[in-house]
Image (tube, rainbow, N blue to C red):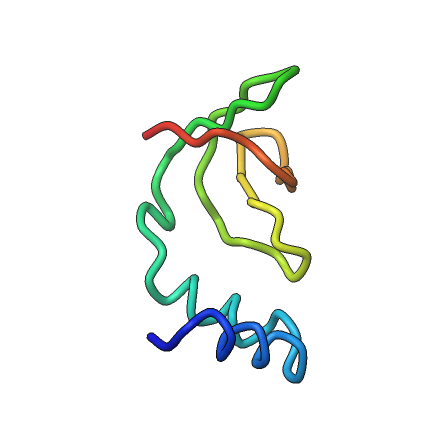
Length: 74
C-alpha cells in the first residue's frame, strides 16, 4: 500500500528489484498457461516470471521468450 509518491521514491532509491519481488509475490496466474498478444504475434506458454527489465517471460515447448509488452489472455 502507500501512495504513488512513496512507490516512486522507493523505485528511485532502490531500483526495480523490490517492486518486482512484491509484484511476483502477488502475481495472478504465475506458473499457469497464458496467451500473450502483441501487435505482430501471439504466443502461448507458461507464465514463468517478470524479468529484471519488467518483461513478461513465457516458457514454451521450444524455448523461453521475454516479451516487453502484450495483451494477456487466460
